[in-house]
Length: 130
Image (tube, rainbow, N blue to C red; front, side, top):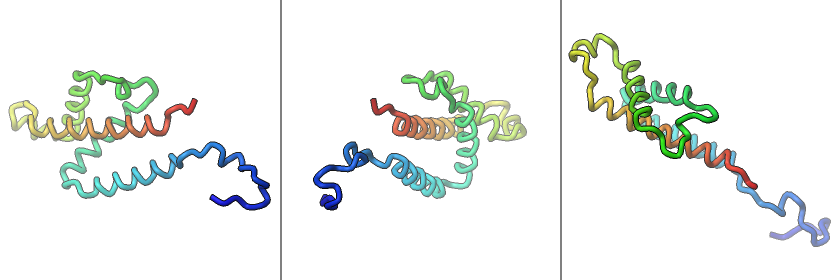
């Protein structure tokens, strides 16, 4: 990099400690993720909306979502809450009150993926430089 003569061989302070543009990188990542979510099937988009709502409730300082080893029971209960919101009561009653295991598995996968994405974003943007 060639420096202008006005610096007389000295480097400007802002160039002495180059930092990546974390904000811009994160925005690009988010845009790409949104483009991929647009490709989801219609039913999965609806389920994802419930999953994101539940994750929004869990996104606070000290949340279990950010534990190094999240509790499996907590994650299952969260997925079950999403299932109960997403599936109408009449449909559950028609199936004798039992949850559809395949649909619950899909919700769990969506939940884990969303949590992974949020944990990664927090790790990338909130890490300390000292």
